[in-house]
Image (cartoon, rainbow, N blue to C red):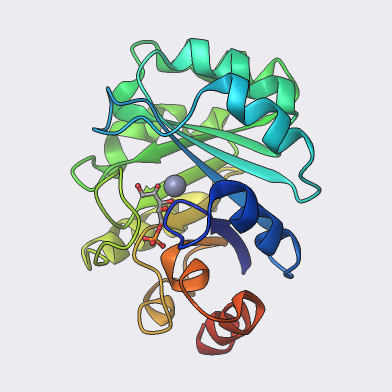
Length: 211
Ligand code: DX5
Ligand code: ZN
């Protein structure tokens, strides 16, 4: 099980939080980008993110919670991230978005909100590298894990045998909920549980021990 840490909800500013995550054993930096259209709040401009993320040594796991998916993929790919994941519900032409990510040699993920069923993304599973299952409604850190998410993860794990994708769960993961997802998810995103704790590394180790 790999750990991807989101800086979205933290008592420190973006730059400080990212620096603190860099000093842990986390496998990825999870970058949550909100455009004020797909979700309420706008939390980035590319002019701000490029210099900030260019310096990061950990592999980037970019999660676009935006409309205009193609535009944001083009801006995200210059950072050469490990993954670019977009919201299925936001994409008009899902296949074109996948091709745009893959043609840059970057792994492509599709994220599904709590109300989206696994069967809706089934036609695309053969083409992608990651399915991000949101355990909360997209937009805010610190929400409560929606338990029905576990069924989706089980469904995806059984489908996975015939494909090549990894499963990521994002939202509401803490020392209590991690055991619900650790059998099925390959990558666990955790935000506020880690960034609001006194010691980021210690919290990562607790998550691993309870998995
Ligand atoms: C939810 C975001 C998550 C969020 C996770 O909209 O996509 O990545 O930051 O934060 P926690 O772990 O606090 O739910
Ligand atoms: Zn996210």
